[in-house]
Length: 401
Image 1 (cartoon, rainbow, N blue to C red):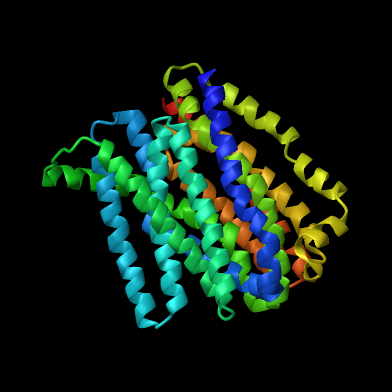
Image 2: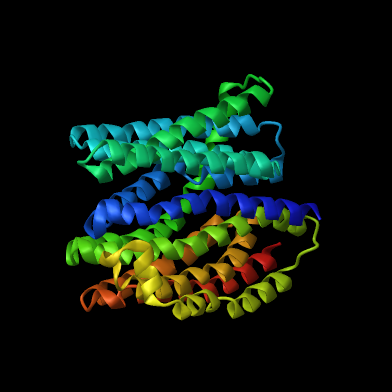
């Protein structure tokens, strides 16, 4: 019952925190216009890229450390991770300063504080603190919306930059709030230099193999924006990005369910209550759900979408449908990849991601030189190809246990 209760809290909290920025979409679409929204999506691509570099999968490292080694030295992992984030983030900021790009400085800082905040959320999650986790999520989303409206109403130029600045301010405020609460509850313990070295090796050992995995996710989730930005118009990118943005609501729901279930999934594997055959059955059964969100969107009239976003966004429904189908394919992916995460088979995950990404990139390059309407099919191709590879890898891991 506790698993169901916590899952419900995580899901409601995640949906509520994500629904607030979603409600901002009609405001942003009218304030920025289709071209401004396309430009914003272009810079958000760099936030994701910088986050991969400064984050180094610390959220996963913290969660795995807690379940495998306990919470005794968890603060050591958190501290060494933050040092890594600040050092690597400082190098990125130096490059942005040399390029004299103010907006890229905001982009880099947003990624840095997003990583720091993500670790705080991960701590609450692995300790099954569903309500504090939800409060932090809600504060982050609410402040982002508040700061966005204040800045976009106060200024009338460089609105894309102001939106990114609003995201940064929200991340900074909420991180400081969460961090001071965490430090206040943590036992003060001094660690030796060799312990910090061991923690750094653990972090690098966990995160570096996942660089390829995360880079693959970045390429599959963001590379198309860069291609479209240079191959088509900003207006085309605006329609495309808006479709992806709305379809991302489904990803938010699935990520919330996945985050809430991971502690119990890991515990089930640890206690031998969950077998690989069950995992495979769940993955196969999930394919029944995959087409349903796209089908529901197909039934909604285009006029509803235009009424919500504005007349500039006619044609967005087509992209929403395709991205919903592509996004839903993450359901069997989550089920299978969490099995590999539990056993620490990050190299296997990276191999799967590379294979899928290569298929995606080849498809993307070919489709980019046709019509923009065909570009979303690259995401579907990449998402489908990784599933049979994951089936093979999980079977291989079972034989090694």
